[in-house]
Length: 175
Image (cartoon, rainbow, N blue to C red; front, side):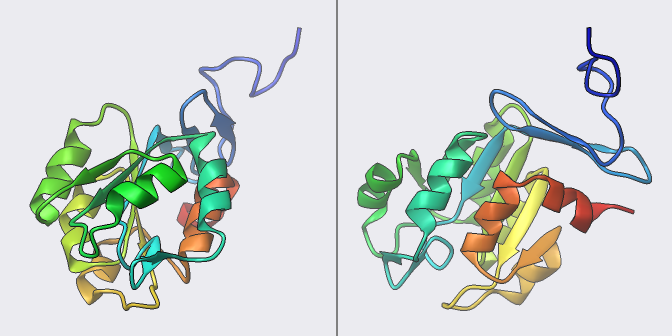
């Protein structure tokens, strides 16, 4: 029998993380706060794409993210390509009209939600999510999104890696 912080699923040492079937659980050092994430929700235009085309490495990294989270794309579908990219990435898409609808959609998910975006219409989604990640996009990033985020990353590739390697969350969010 194994003993230690990982032998009992109810006991997780601060600074540790557990990969679950869907999602991850991170215990933040200092306050011992648990961050449980089951879903990853992504904006499409300006976040996963530039000018309607997927950014480099997104398909490969999204595949890795899908192994740990239930993934969703929420988009206004500015370029009319959401269904195409949904099929290519293997991630369901929901076309929404505005940020309010994104937030409503996130609130309907059971379990913790990591939301990733760059736009003003992502601010309400960020507020509804357990973890909000703003991406500095080649198409620009809304100042409101930066203020609403828990974490700001330089690229979508780094946002996806952050979700795949949850120990990075510990390093960034610890007290």
